[in-house]
Length: 176
Image (cartoon, rainbow, N blue to C red):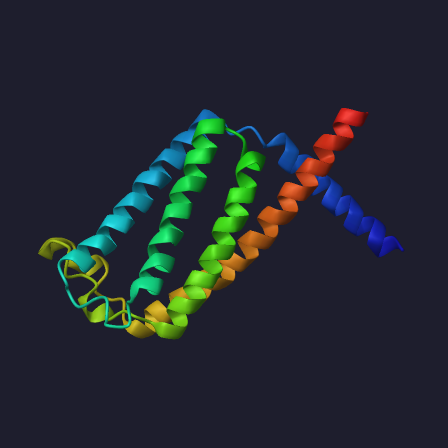
């Protein structure tokens, strides 16, 4: 009985905290714009690999995998746009949940198929910048993909719970 009360109190405190932080300050909105630029640059990096046929994408990188790969990036862009335009975290959370769930599926499938050859990952960079990424091997990339998959699942659960508890907290505040 006491455990249930403590759990409810933790959820209530967390919902209250999240509800208070729902309005995104301008500094965080700027951070979301920076995030948009970073995601676009990452996307362009992979497009360059594909356009220049560097060998980074193997023959297993078919249309389905390409859609999963690039749509995951597009959801990241869309989520940031919603946050920048509306300035409310809870309004963007359903988009975040869908983004994280989609990314979980996409990264899981990328791990299974693994259509990459990381020996060519640095090939689109200028020579003086290649050292930044040439240390990444296929094995390291697989570990990173597993970590991303786990983080996406956890983020989907957290965003879903945060959305529901903030909505519940807001609706209780309207009644009181």
